[in-house]
Image 1 (tube, rainbow, N blue to C red):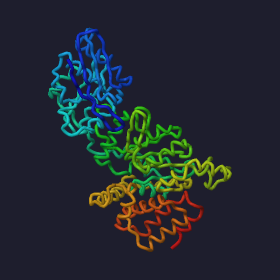
Image 2: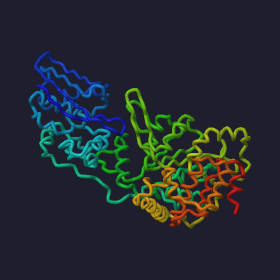
Image 3: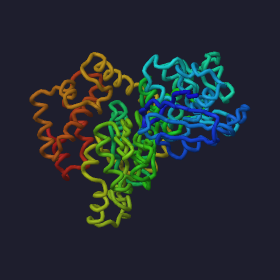
Image 4: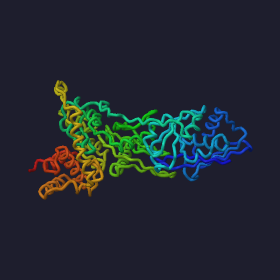
Length: 516
């Protein structure tokens, strides 16, 4: 007898339907599995045989043939176990085959029949058309995640013996787990930061518009301290953003059992020894890298020049496009990648250049070689460039705390709400100024002739690229939003220009800023 169950195969965050066809007959005992299955899938024969034996189903006298269709689609992972076991039971007459026709089954089996959690349950179910299946049967540990997809009813089971009840719809659906409030106290507070007013202002602007930042300063100036406090002043994730973050974490295996919707913006800080694949994603089958794991959050690249040149260059296209495309011989996977990139570097190899002491012994050639480790195109993609002077001891001893994250976050949220309104009114499609297209930028930033000529003069004097010019306008739009202004005025542009000087010809930018 032949029975058919349905499961899903993931490729990145996309999923394709897989038919699990089983032919069972009383012949020479064997268990064959075909359909371009990789090792973990082929090993399901052992897991399924043992799990069924625990239910009293003996396969020692049966010839089992399992076909995973379509045959030209590569199947990876252990998520087909539950569907294979169900189809085998139906093919042998132990389960009504009609129950399988409207059900999607996802789950790995242990040898004793327990249903183990899987990666990628949310994106797999989210890929379904609404109403495509009567129900989805998933591992109990993935239940809270599965119901977020809202494409079909979900039954979560902990053991194979519960399968029949789940297929009949008599298993209670899992509860959705969504935090009632966002735990902003998870992140350190900006009140801990002493001094560095320019850097604090840059962080507020970056948070308000979703801009990338480059910090340049000596060791101990507070680069890492500022970056780690940035998530605490970002606005809460919208539900659509939270679903994307949850799906990414699910594929990466970062969701804990019984976790539901992720509402905290991610913060990723990979070590500078990370490989290209670890940063941008890849491997086979494709997995998300740090750039994608920080989607809608913060990617902190400390000691920027120490990263591999190839890893940094691999960031160039994703930082422009907002996604990572991983192409392999076996197929292609696309991962979203719209984090805020915060980079930090020292002014020279020893780190003490310009700190007011005589400790730096780096000659000009060594300094140039150090800075050349980061290419111009990468620098150009960082919206704000901020110099951090050394923090003096007397500043650390001040008893008065700096402004806290709560007050800064309120201003950031107010600025973001102005951007959301522009999106809702149809002026733009993107919620963050940093992501505005050139056409959208022309709509939301209209400059008078005098202001436009001043910006052009700055661009000419500083050698600003076309991309850099767009960055200045986007940052100026954010500064205007923070000020509650509908128009971008000269003060907003001057501040944006002042935060865009570290990759320019010496002296020219400062001369432009001081001009009337």
